[in-house]
Image 1 (cartoon, rainbow, N blue to C red):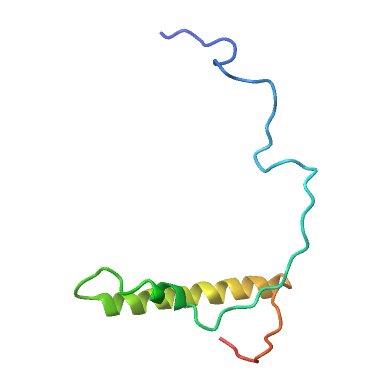
Image 2: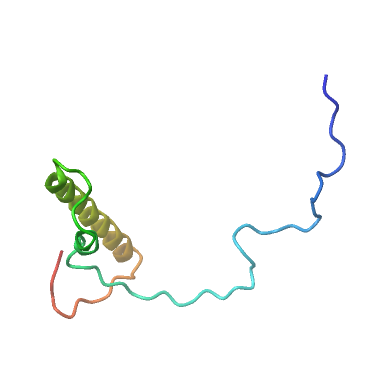
Length: 92
């Protein structure tokens, strides 16, 4: 049988560290967000995906994923009252 460990491991401290940070931190005011009208702009700017035979299909699939991510983020922002007004009147 192994011996039971007694005491603290080397380097252990009595101080308790809060994982999420200190309570004295002031939370800033929430700002509104404006969803993008072109979710795939940044990935397209990086060029075609490195798939030689199916780069067009991969780019279309990735664009679909980005569009769905924008829809989800927009829905979460709207549910929390963080959705800004669209000055141009464009919808996704």
